[in-house]
Length: 281
Image (cartoon, rainbow, N blue to C red; front, side, top):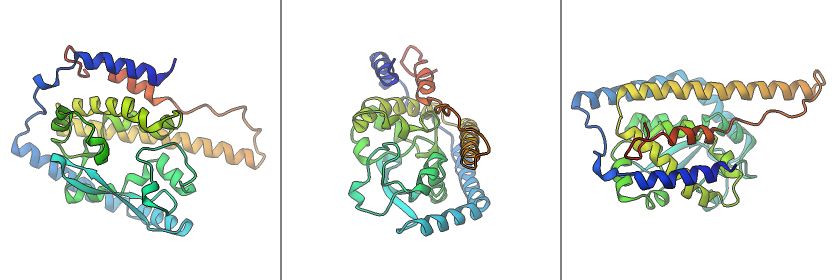
């Protein structure tokens, strides 16, 4: 059964039950709670930049040494209350016409550098966004910031809810759909599939987070992100070890490596657990 069609039909059924306008857009935090979350974001981003200073510098050197072009990639995204800002990433594509950069990922296009492919899989390309967190236009946890082209297609209720908080480095949707490029690569029309299926699923996760946002939930999502990325890193390390041993003739080539876990199915099962209003439990 096609995962995309299953998710799409489920989302249609859930949408018919949804009554977003009858619920508050988000939990109202007290001033001390907001200050505590901001202090946590500042301290965590500073500690992260300091702790990762050497790996970040090494990554910068490798990017610069293996392909011409700048180290960082900047792109306009939509932040809290609809304000536009520049998001920072490590450059993962060969330098070229900026208009040729796809709006959504399409797997491993020829324009992605070999180093960039690894950075994307391990989400290392997202680490410069700690700078965005430090300056205050992003948070460690929150809905991932979207391109203006996609936000323009949000419903008025989705804009009111999702854009009421700072966008973040990670959230429920980014954990569930962290292999988004591979999911879209299987589609004949990646952009249409993203808008029709993935974006709608992400918005459900975003609404779920915004209505329950708290420092405790942020800590939970940070822990879940570390576990998920750690699992991906170990899987990648095992695959690399098998490939290297096979290349050296130390082990016979395996019949086939197991395919990556279909995380869209996991997202589907999580997204389809709803209450009477159509929101996730």
